[in-house]
Length: 80
Image (cartoon, rainbow, N blue to C red; front, side, top):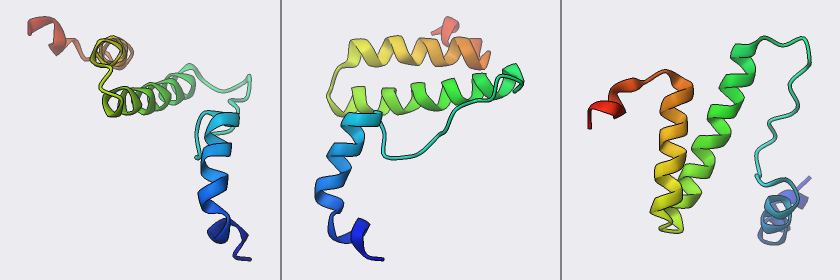
């Protein structure tokens, strides 16, 4: 029962490499509404934004930020 705890140091990089994340998000059923698809895309974009900021890739972070604003319908960014 302690496998994930004991092997965490080796598993985390492996899972991130294989799946791009350590958090399971699953697949969206084809019958799911557009809002669910949009919500999942926003979650993925925010995760990518956090990684870009950690790597100090601010150009990529700005692109991701703009895409997030576009998807979320937040147009306050245009005034800045």
